[in-house]
Length: 321
Image (cartoon, rainbow, N blue to C red; front, top):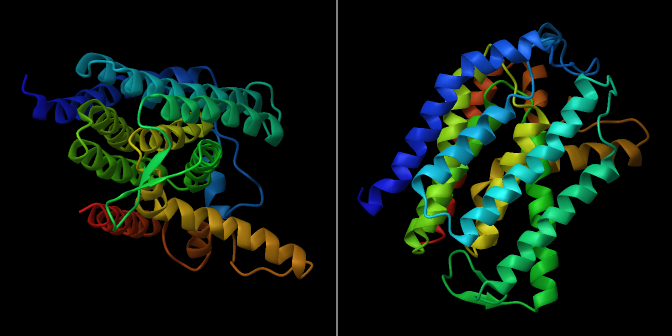
């Protein structure tokens, strides 16, 4: 197997595993009655989704892990990135289980979830600092590296990873939206990693993209399964961990621009609501719900947001060349 084919093979394996195991996974999730609970304060068109199998993120993460193990050399960086994805996926799994099985509406408490994410992020950031390249980050559009104080480097990367994990979670509100957008971002990072000489990390990112595309087969509207926090927290951590370990953390807000905008819409909505004692800027946050309530169909919002993701990915790649 030629080295250049390894990322493509990883993507194909992850895609194939997800598509092949998808029907069986959905069947068992349905039998176990792991159905989605829909927010009563969300768009009314989403109420019909109640009961759709959730926790489908286990399928994404299993396909990702299998593809990486089969096609990469399992270098320390790839192993650590995979542990980050699986670790945050487990946090999401606990959150989903408490919501669905234990019937606790909010799942894990926010501080419990953040503590777990921050702990994993701290380990990733410390590993990135200690692995030999110090506390440097590649600067977009410039191409040079900035040397940060080790403490700043670690804290910054912890913040980015926690934010990225939750940003993908926030974006996961429409059929196919989070999976498709993550696949686009992961493909862009695979190209960056390959260009930077990190073939194993390119394989990791390609596997993320393949698993997400395979999941979209079942998650496209009308969704047969949702990824749940299991998938969204794990995927956000995968993108962030890979970026941290390839020194491309500063590219994440560019390539993942859609996730940034979605998160900012929630922050702005909450802040404005509190400042004005009840007024809103958006019809509903996150932003995809604003457009839904404005008359766009769910599929239209998904496709247009995918296009935004592609534009962000292209800008990110241009920033590297």
